[in-house]
Image 1 (cartoon, helix red, strand yellow):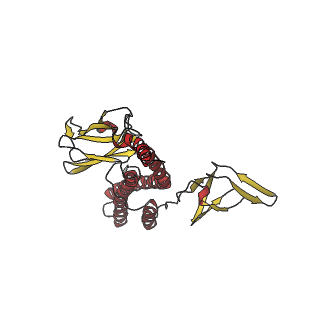
Image 2: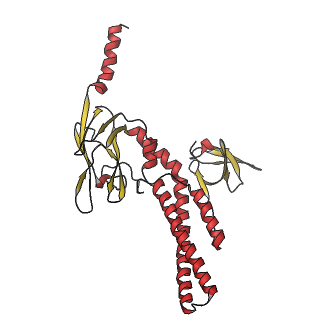
Image 3: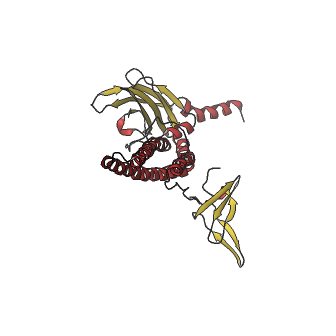
Length: 309
């Protein structure tokens, strides 16, 4: 083929994305509880390919599913233990007041108080983990490279140029000092595919809210660190439980969903377990997992399940 013709064809393919672009203008600001509008400057704003981000969101959800369930289960256990401990502390205090010279009652009250305070501190650790796994932090950390980026000016305004073709999402994270507390914000919103658009990133379309153009709903508070996992926290709680004679937190059963049909051998033949079947996960060893089925425990490849690989 003629080199000139090849060059012309290449330009026809690339021109829509190189030259034909649409500009999206917007502003980033927060309205305080007192009604004051705070414009956020020097905030980095990113544009992502929508399909890539939606795929990442699904992957993060799949990876975080068990962790979210386990930490929520642990929180219920700790809340119940705290309620019981607080009631015991109050009852011990009343008994001590009635028999103020009884050293056994005084010791009982002191022990109940130590347990209550330990559980208050531990509740904070569990709440921190729960906020992290339900926040947008893990999503943003996994997002692909943006196709474009910009930065807000002193008035919170930004302008970002996108290719005319394609579907894109606009994301941003920010923080500010409010009194003695740092507030964290995150946005991931859709764009109008037609022409120019004015976007507002504010309270009503944060990832922690269900805004009309918000693509990601992550209700956990921003800014919490990725600290101890649910299993590590459960071990810490069980040490407290053992020390004070509480019920220990059991590991809740985990389940997988089959993404591929599997065949199970029986003495009289075999059966096929269809896609979508939910089965209890017993253990994982490399590329295989052991699952529990009414016909007996089975070892199957991990690629046949919804577990991350």
